[in-house]
Length: 446
Ligand SMILES: *[C@@H]1O[C@H](CO)[C@@H](O)[C@H](O)[C@H]1NC(C)=O
Ligand SMILES: *[C@@H]1O[C@H](CO)[C@@H](O)[C@H](O)[C@H]1NC(C)=O
Ligand SMILES: *[C@@H]1O[C@H](CO)[C@@H](O)[C@H](O)[C@H]1NC(C)=O
Image (cartoon, rainbow, N blue to C red; front, side, top):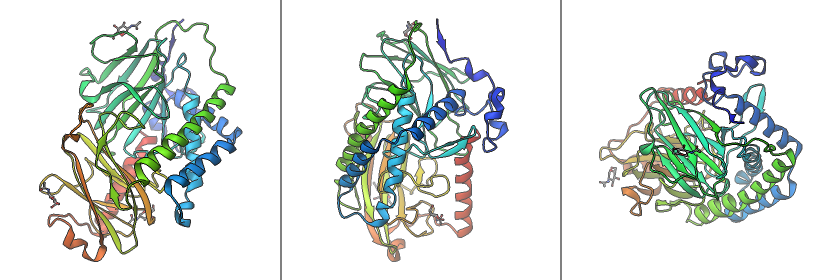
C-alpha cells in the first residue's frame, strides 16, 4: 500500500468549509500553500495535546535554564516575557512531536506566531530566533522509507529556499542539504525531490542516512507583499503497509523529550553560549556552523543589547556573497515580538543600502525617523541573531560578510550615520508599517 499525501493539494479545502473560520478568507481556501488539510489536522492535534498536558517539571527546568543563560539580575521587564517564551517553546515541542511519524509523513508549518484559522486558536510556537521572514516546514524522515517531495513555486519563489536533512529535531544537526542554487525547478514552477538511501548525483536528490529524523524546509520571504512560500507535499513511496501510526502516548513522551532537549539546545546553547556570553551591546563575529540550529549555508552573528531611551545601537552590515540576509531583534528570550505590526526586522529586500553597498540600522526604543529603524517594541533589552544566507556550505572565510556595531546617544545620531542615510516623515513611516502589516497578514490569505 502506498501512503500518498501528494494528491491532497488538489482537493479544495472547501469540502470542509465549515471548519474554516472567518479569519481565513474564503478566497484563500485551496490556494494558500500553508492552509492545507494536514496543517489543520496537525494544528488541531497539537492544540489538543498541549491543552491536556502541562509538562510542569520540564517547563520549570526550561525556565530556570533560560534565566541562567541570561544571567542575574534579571529586570522585571525581561522577566515579564519569560513565561510566554516558555509556553511558545512548549508548544513548539508538541508541534515537533505531532509530526514525527516517518511512516505517515506530513508537511507541517511550525515556528510561527499565534493565529486563528480553521476555527482553531493556534498558540505561538516560536523559539530560538524565529525569523519573521521564514516559513519553516517539517517532514518526518526515516532512512527505512523512500520519499518523494513535490513542490510548486509561485513566480520566482522565495528569496531563499533550503532543504536540510537533520538528525535531531531540536539541535537540528545537518546531515544532508539541498540549497536554492542546486534545486532544479521546471519552467511551470514544479519540482520533485527524492529522499532515500541511494547515493546518486541525480538532481534534487537528498541522500538519507540512518541518523535522519526530519527534513527542515526554509522558505525565506524577502518581499512580504510579493513572494509566496512554495506549495509542498510529501509521499512515502516505499511499502509502509502494516505500520501502526504513533500513539498519543508516544507523542506526549516525545513532546516532553523535545522540551528537555530544547532547554539544553536553545537555553544553555543558543541563548547562553552564543548570545549572553558576548559583552552587552556587541555582536559576535559572523560564523558558519552545521550544528545548533543554524543553516549550513548561513553565517550568523549573535548578541544582546541594553539601551536607555536616549540611546541607539547603530549596526552596519556587509552583505558579502549572501543572497539573502536579515537584521532582526527578538525579546530577551530570543522570540520575535509583533513582527507583523512593528518593524522589528528588515531584510535584504526591505532595507535601503548605503552608497558603498553596506546597510546601516538603528536599533532604538523611540523612533529616530530613519528608514532602517529597528523597533525594540518598547523594550530596553533584547537579543539578536543576524543571518546571511545563500553562502557556500564549506566556506570558512565567511564569504565577505561583516558587522560593526556601536552605541551612541540619540542626540548625536545624525553625526554618526552615513550622510546618505534615508530619513522618513511620520507619514512615510506609517506607510512603511502599513505595507509591512499587509505583507505579513498574507500568510493566512495567500
Ligand atoms: C531514490 O532516489 C533516486 C534518485 O532520485 C531515484 O532514482 C530512485 O528511484 C529512488 N528510489 C526509490 C526506491 O524511490
Ligand atoms: C514600536 O513597537 C511597539 C510595540 O509593538 C508599537 O506599540 C509601536 O507603535 C511601534 N512604534 C512605531 C513608531 O512603529
Ligand atoms: C561603507 O559605508 C559605511 C557608511 O558610510 C561605512 O561605515 C563603512 O565603513 C564603508 N565601508 C567601506 C568598506 O568602505
